[in-house]
Length: 218
Image 1 (spheres, rainbow, N blue to C red):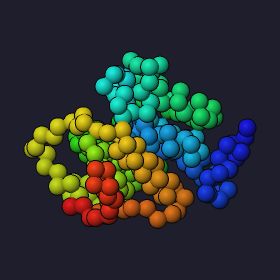
Image 2: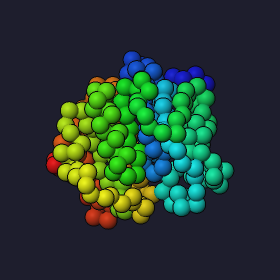
Image 3: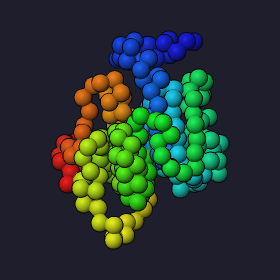
Image 4: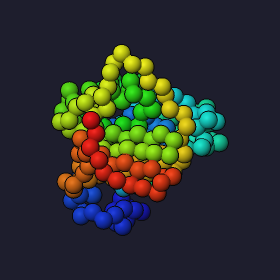
């Protein structure tokens, strides 16, 4: 199979597909939302991907993380991500790092982090480098997705650096899947020049209320 045979069913022009294929994309965090974002981007045909995660897969990940399997248990998440991506498209180029210290020449960053401190660091780095940040958050049965370009992350979420933020551990698999998939779709839209949800506007959803809506942050 050639590349274009694999991805010929995408609703993209040939030039858009080629642009996505070469576009350098960073994904920070390969758990719930980040794993689903990776899966979607690879199946869209992205081949130039940089991933960041210091963790290994453990049993508590299995309820919501697509890369968590019996075979990947106690394996580095970056290694499992590379194996998964190449099992779909062996030409996918994965550069892996344990810590996020910068976008490593990526032109867009997809946020799959699971705590506010890391999300804030990612947002500030992306803003400093003047590249878009695709923000996604999954918590229990709710999620948020938006793209930060000029709007400040701190203003959007009223960040007070003197407060302590708890890491969320209660998330349903469909919530992680939807948030990660929406994040991938917004990255795609930015790359190929289609409209995307731009902060302060964000896309919200609540699965228990069967509700999706747009509203402004901050």
